[in-house]
Amino acid sequence: MLVFNQQPIGIFDSGVGGLTVYRALHEKLRGERFVYLGDTARVPYGTKSLATVERYAIENSQFLAARGIKLLVVACNTASALALPKIREKIGVEVVGVIGPGARKAVRLTNDRANPRIGVIATEATVQSHAYSEAIRKASARAEILETPCPLFVSLAEENWTDEPETRSIARKYLQKIVEKNVDALVLGCTHYPILRRVIQKTVGENVMLVDSGEATAEEVENILNEKNLANDHPPKHAGERQLCDDLDHFYVTDAAERFARVAERFLGVKPAKLEAVEVFGLDKLNE
Image (cartoon, one colour):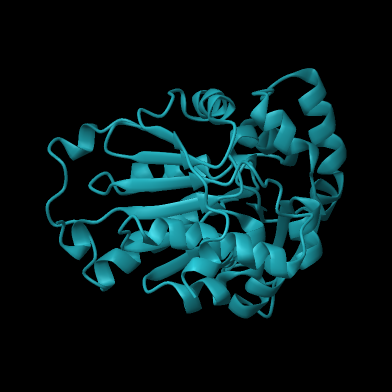
């Protein structure tokens, strides 16, 4: 049996977008192994009630906890906004969402400005929750915040339409207010959006600092592992040469495994070596 600090890090998302968070964690923490769950049978979470999102998040978390994880990353923005307290009640490991780290990094990057202006782009559900605004406010009372929903970015990312004329046109329309506001930093508040990073950067201008919440989360996870002595003290051989989706990382989905593999290849350039379809429904009741 593995000792605790050699156990994997768990990641869950409502679907495929959390793969960008997995990539950021993998690149930052080459000595760690990962277990990823995409709840593809029940995506999207943004249209669901609070009680339903909490139940789904707990089921996902308990599934991963049963796989012996040492830390859980909630890669789903909706679950990060609504369910972190309930998740922490149910599982006995460190839990990190994506909203807090992204918000705090945006504040750090703009802290030298007298009147920092921070933009946030996300799905409609995340914008309506104001979770990023609240997290930014906790870190800075001075920041001026502008939130804008960009729902079509999700489909464009999954189709890998990263530089088509239609994508550039949609980006200009969505980001018009961000450009007019002349923000200092822009938080990519949906896990799909880093796939469109290049077109977003071109649209808002090179002077705007883009904040990838997945990268910010990976930085905070690295700090937690070091502070709590959870970093793997026996990393895999040749850890620095590890490839994304190799056979040391295990991927699970609740439906549509073939589609998940195709999108993973678009996002990451490779299909998962270990991909398995599973059922997580009812785990919250079984573990009460």
